[in-house]
Image 1 (cartoon, rainbow over the protein chains, first blue to last red):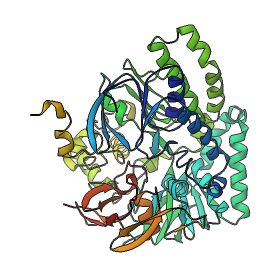
Image 2 (cartoon, chains in turn green, red):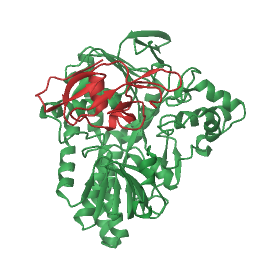
Image 3 (cartoon, rainbow over the protein chains, first blue to last red):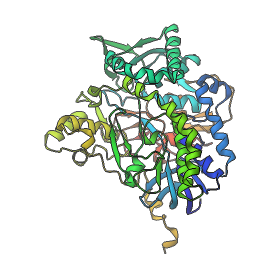
Image 4 (cartoon, one colour):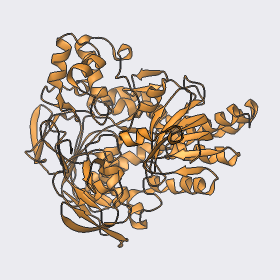
Length: 464
Length: 95
């Protein structure tokens, strides 16, 4: 790895791969850094290594990823797998850990393409072994061909629940139930957005096909569930939920949960990029111009890390951002990049038509986001409950950072990735300060754990 | 509980999970190998000694911390299995 590149891209999912390929093909010296051992991101995880029969079960959308990865492999972009980024400054200094060694590199342009992760929604029992994210279930499937052995329950909200249940059925896995929080109100609110969504009807027909397959296979499908809880002593034994006014209990040792995905903004926050609360997507996202440029010169963001749009949109956004980079590096002029980006803009616009509908339909109920149960653990690392957070607020600690100082909520190894949203929701609820005006946890490097040895060797030339 | 799909055999390496030798596919993450072994929990928490297992599988939640080759606090979902690797449950802070 060199000390400097014209363009450093962080993340090897669809956005990063597409951007790296375009930039490299125009002669830019590109380094693509990624935490995973192989390219594809979470969506196309293990796309090069997955046996044909597994890829077949995962479906055609998954197999699309192979093209992107091949084009990237054929480009001159330098690829650094197993590489973590622990710092990013506004001056485009990037702290990396590569082959156990921490070091600083710089870039003329930085593209953050590190995607999204599953929205953590705390509820009683969600920390029990046996409860796992649905996305994690999919990673196990894609990466290892590992699936639940019997009678898995999928719960939460979002298209991924249906997709994963469908994939499991294809693999012969018994799915006990799919429990979604979407209610009649969601359907009514989503209805006006349906005509736009129908323009990209393949998404909708796909969803309906999944649903039909599941029903035919005898999977219990319930919408409008509330008050999801997981029970067990050392690991999951059963789950409970309310549906149509009555309480239900299901025996299972495997619960997969999913509440949509939210942008991974730790890097853009650390760099100091401006962010805003996006009401429809119920998450914070960076302020971006139409090229993916952030509020900081030379730092661009593409893909789900800039706002949730899905894999296809990420690919287009990656290319559009790469064209902006080519302009910033004076390789193409404005007219040329306008022209080059035209097709991707068109496809991206079409692909995004489904989003307003999905956002309304799969909106997570506010009552869940503010963690109503006092005994629910909010901070998985420091084991801080919703009740403790509410007590802190009642004692006058009226923003997320004050709650953090008092309770240690957000100070564990995950550095608040799993609890910051829930804390913000609880604070907003108790103080009546709207989320868009509320203060988030301050994010500071190192964003990944570094050993003292790695820190001490950061500048080996300067030590005596 | 988890199981492996019946797929064409891949190249394997041998790792030791909590003292038991197991053959696992090359290139797999430690967390995946551990989940497929169904050991129940992979760590206990430092504060309330509660059992935990891998949760996000993508490096963001840090719930899969384990002792790998004697070094505690390794993110099992971010480390690939290697032949001869010793993987152990982590108790509390691990230090």
